[in-house]
Image (cartoon, rainbow, N blue to C red; front, side, top):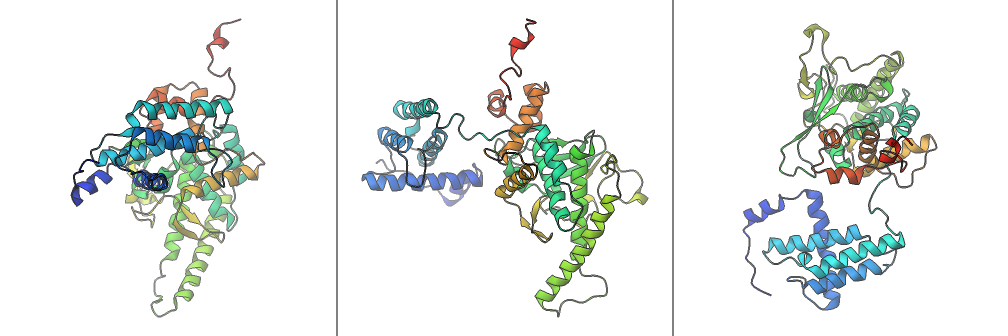
Length: 404
């Protein structure tokens, strides 16, 4: 193997930052798998021969590992090759993935799996339809304690993910500082960094007011922010009280009691609001004495008892108490929980169903690809086509316009 240059610590850090943390973790795991394979075969992992990588693909693309029901999907094999190539590029070495034998091996794996119908569309989640979403939101709605806290969070989470066409990573990473109330548009949500915007140019997503309060994302966000603010304010020590000498367990119980009382009062007040009344006409926490708000109001500037760096969507435990950061799996759990509540199938559905569902529904409604990209941030038409699902072969088919 030729000598490889040693990169400085500063340069290595910059190279690492060229990819997202999730990509780095995935590539690191894939590289460890490759190294283990090479150790078993008695070969070196760096510099890798293209034929060696092709054999690697052939093995895992045709062999069923213990604990699995089928070989690894072609999309997974493609990512493994990308990880191997990434390490080679980092050492300024030729990438084996560019060789024809490796590309042919990947192509063969895709064709063979398609013929066997092992992975007809690798990695694709079932799209969430708008009628299903309406049913789910109806079943999720609650103003009782403690279910009402989880319901308020889940409603805002599902609508923001669906209407915004967002990935689960963007939902769990969203912070208060990323949102602004808009007098005409509802809410503006700035995505600082995303999968397709690693350099942080930023992308603004509109979460508009809906015609119906059930599917009004702006109303759902307003309720969730107001409830979060109520709970955050209740967690603070009341004026005139000194809890510094109290045991932590006693303080914890006192905070829980105050939050429970405050949340129950908030949820009870929500019952008195008519179903047809929108609550998003004013910014959350806006003081009426300040007059009419400007057109654009950052949430971080409002007196909501929430800090700019606080996450928008957080975990909620079974007792209704706010927890720590939300995970991507929790987004999927919220979606599946809502589907089960109305007896809808859950197989094939995940957090990604929100993004796929938005693209599908927008396409069926006649939106152009450019209009869909404006919301989702997809870079290419081809990327949108991957997410677009047709419920029927006749949807969007020119044959229906022939007037036969």
